[in-house]
Amino acid sequence: MSKCALIFSCLLTASIVNAAVLIDRGLPNAGTVNNIAGAGRSNVDWSFPAPTVPPFLGGDSFVVPNGAPGYNITSIMVFITSTTNPFTEFDDTFALYGGLASNPASFGLIPTLTSISRVYYPGSGNLSDACITGAGVNYQDQTGDCHPIYSLTFAVNLHLNAGDVFNFAVGATSQLGDCEANTPGNCLFLHASNAALSLTPQQGSNGVMLVYDPLDLGAGPYTFNSAPCPANGEDICGGFDKESDINLVVQGVATPEPSTYALFLVGAGLMYLRRRKS
Image (cartoon, rainbow, N blue to C red; front, side):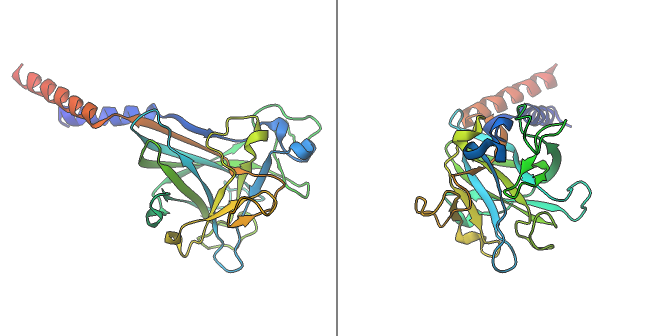
């Protein structure tokens, strides 16, 4: 490997290792969740089965921060609740879709690697919560049943500019949730929460989620507000007593301006020439 190639390889590796949280809209605090929280309940989960197969894809959006000219997005994490175990259900294949909101035609499947982890709500929770365990608090559905929570981390390689609005959706070919098996639609329940009640950072929450038809992705999303109808003019509304947003965590590294890259190239070139002459 040449000196310059080695330098670039090291720089790329360092960027991945040094990835930081850019958008923190993670799970709500355990003290705000489930039926015991009453009217202050922050958490809910969503599945989007359509009247016909395949089910729709559920998702949301995030805005790239303005701290740098651009960012290399290295991972997008969402959370699901499930009545089955993704670790033992080998037909669970998760898919991430995405694209710039300014260019609906760009929305499509994103190449990614997916990792799954069992997680719990942050914080200690209420000791009287019906879904509390020795390890932490699980999700409680509207009927009172308890379900485990899993994080889905999609490793990606996306370059986005500061201020970009990025739409995404998550699908699965699986038997998670109530949807049909072996379809490209969303056969899982995506975790969401109300930003004002979550008591955790909910960066970029706007109370509007997105729903896509997997057979017509380029048509753009339907907007979904979970507050009682009529909401604020969204295409779909209702299902919860308040607004909610899909919980997510986005990680990445800031990318320097083109002039910084140019200086790096000059420096790398001088180092190479000096090495050759010595």
